[in-house]
Length: 149
Image (cartoon, rainbow, N blue to C red; front, top):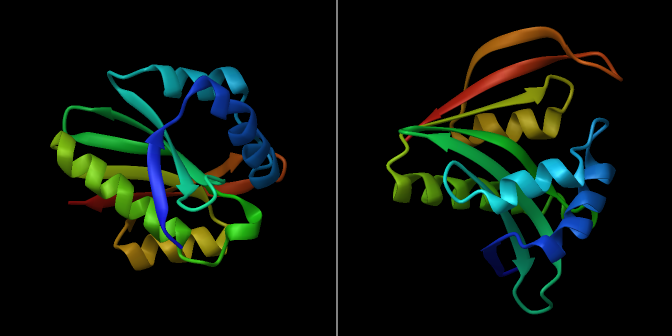
């Protein structure tokens, strides 16, 4: 599958929010997503679209300051999971970071999200810490990861 990446626009937020609700027990609000989409200084919200159909297949939200960034959200639409799109999103994030002079990328993930934990480790993220009982509903630890470019 060929994928195109583009900065999210206001008209993308409804569809992004639907994926957010389907993907996470504690989804971000449309207003929070718009904060990332509308900020061109220290944040970005990027859509991944299937090249042929234009269908939104995933997205990421990234915030950055100086030479460090944090992946705030990364998600793939359910019907497109297990097709390498998570890795493709990470590769796009790495390219974005290199273009901005970012040398470290951080993220946190639920410890029980085994697919995501496996993806981050296989991509080269290193576990640097844990936050016990960080997530609510359901309770779960957060694993803290860092990737050095």
